[in-house]
Length: 66
Figure 1 (tube, rainbow, N blue to C red):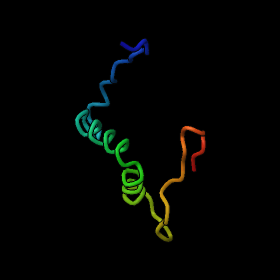
Figure 2 (tube, one colour):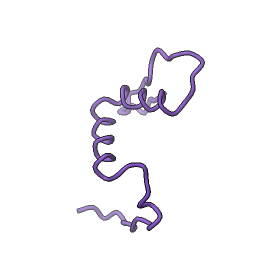
Figure 3 (cartoon, rainbow, N blue to C red):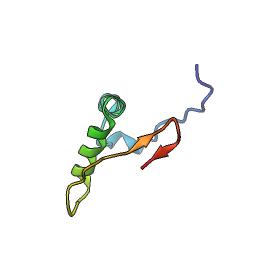
């Protein structure tokens, strides 16, 4: 078991736009297909002058991310 500190969820978070199940599904998708996941969110929540060619360019093992 993790030694990380856990904090209770504040009462006003009960009206969040996602629930635990949706969060878990989003998390799994972000791990399985990060470019599609983040590309979809970028399209949904941001306005772009032109579409992008590449969502990300990274090698986390070497610390490179852009």
